[in-house]
Amino acid sequence: MWHNARAVSALETYDWVDTTNLSRLVANFARAQMLVSIFDGDPQKWIEFLDQNGTADERARELPVARDFQRRLARDPKYIDRLRMLVRELSQLVTM
Image (tube, rainbow, N blue to C red):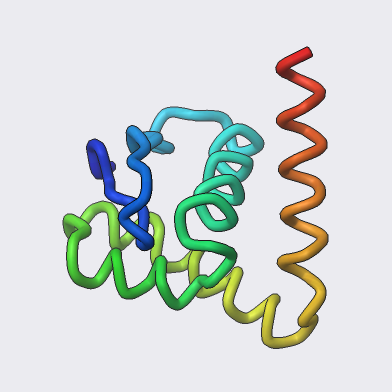
């Protein structure tokens, strides 16, 4: 995926996590982490980033995921808050 993708706010950069060969669980956690950390929990920002900067393969793999996050958020406005909490808690568990 994108290497050294700039955060939407342009405050920090992250190496992009290539989800191609990861287990589904690891790939989905990486995606959730990217959504809440890089795109501030806004799936539309991720979609726009993919449209403007993604390769055809990245768009094919990641746009459905970003759109699914967008649908879930539309059905449940508290979804992103819970996702942020879970990502933070899991990150703290594995860094201890």
